[in-house]
Image (cartoon, rainbow, N blue to C red; front, top):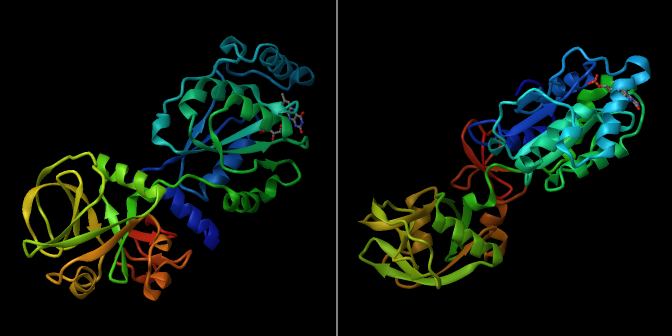
Length: 359
Ligand SMILES: Cc1cc2nc3c(=O)[nH]c(=O)nc-3n(C[C@H](O)[C@H](O)[C@H](O)COP(=O)(O)O)c2cc1C
């Protein structure tokens, strides 16, 4: 974090920096430098890769002769907006859109429209940007930005807009850091770590997070849990596990696995096994219960004491939860993976607002 930021922006920063690589792209075009300054101010507040769009033809004076060239470029687009040839050539860009889930577009306004150079980039990259979460910042001297927003929506019909566009103009450009900070708070960027990274398991009045593996079976399971929680009965087997029938089959990716206490695996495609001991067998790993102490796991799984009723859910609120777990899940609070509340999270994995995040 490069600057002192408010808590809300810190939260957003966390969201935008989750994962090992920057997953937010800030793309800007700037003719006279204002959008470049805005991009710099923004990337001082969030971790993001930055991409400048440059016209292929250098040294053009878009504002000469009462903005004649800029006007001409915009008219060419307006007359045939679906034709790639209407858009000015730009330098090739060296980015892989797949690497990003969030994109912030920063563009100047020209004659109330989006600057032709940025239109060119969006037109050429619309399909790669489809499904991304996109925010828009527009810089003008004084004209309002409604038509630029329309241009953006025309050029990127298949993105999810993160919220209202931010308008920065000559009168408030100097206050852009505050404007951007406020704007970021209201934007709904996509989190890298999705809900599918954690499920909750409840038994005997205790709820614990389960850190999920990323495989076909866990994706299928979380898709089912998105509809509703699953409850099943599990009983002791072999002196090391509780096993129950999930009621449906998941795709197997069985590998020889030596389990440890807390592991959750798929056996035979449709049985869920919860380990309080260890076994070596061909299983598909589903995840690991995040418990604090062996006593936690014991009072939860009750080894050797017969059938228990187990509920799997994506949100702890859908399950029968103890007071402790309600407390664990207070919003905007950081918890260790074991469910312990922490006020000073350091680097590592935490649970916040029901999601796993990496600090
Ligand atoms: C070709 C052209 C047309 C412009 N048209 C307008 C306009 O209609 N209204 C306005 O308020 N600003 C207009 N501007 C000013 C820019 O929107 C403003 O200076 C913006 O901050 C420029 O961003 P930049 O410095 O990143 O290029 C125009 C600028 C150019 C070059």
